Image 1 (cartoon, each protein chain N blue to C red):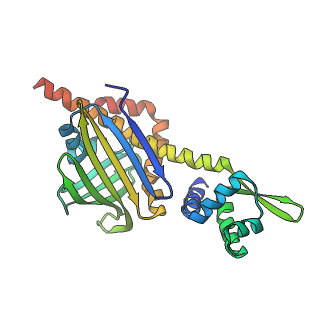
Image 2 (image 1 turned 45 degrees about the horizontal axis):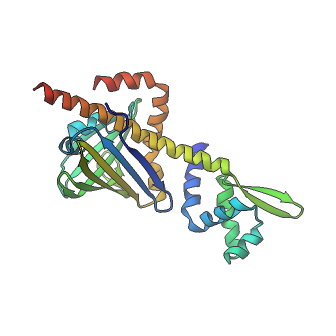
Image 3 (image 1 turned 135 degrees about the vertical axis):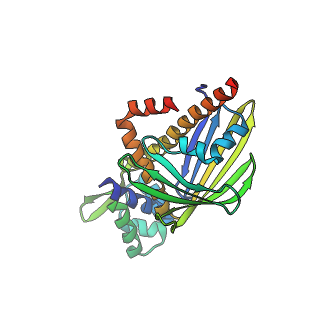
Length: 165
Length: 112
């Protein structure tokens, strides 16, 4: 695995926007697949030891994805995403909100924009997250923060779990 | 305690006037009256902003004679940046997981 893959993370606090850029050592088709297919997403898109469980995912414009972030002690935080724009292997946009377990969204939410491009077998992904409210931005990170704290405590477990994937 | 403060600190820096106040007192400690003058605001309005900034520990008062000077508390801002760094870390963790998933899929394809 290459270690010189770009990872860029910026937060514009005033604009309530998070900018993330990451390169992956794989072709565009495969990376697009990993970001848009439920089975693959659930394998990586939660920082261990947090888990992700997708109830359904309908990847088309107007389609929705309903999923939960699950903490090691079994607490579930449900999220509802609606795909607002899809340009295959180039870009997709979604609107993300927290929700209760009955799919009722907790507004306001955030707008996510994913862009993909490939050069010399390396695929670059740009993610922009615009939050309608600062409180929302703070909530967005809540689950991750818990995950991070636990991760530090369980680094060995994390590495063991990841290498099995 | 940090959770409570964290929310306050987001609120505090979301406001453009409060960001301007922070920028100003990062250079030099100021009294509420001086702030009111510099921002052409009422003393009451300034007091509200000071209250928010003080509650989340972004500024610290210092009593000099009859005046109160407010200082910028750089340490608090670092704590906030530290928290953002954790958010960054969570993304890094996920992407590292994705690296492994991608490598596995590529390996499986080559086997076929």
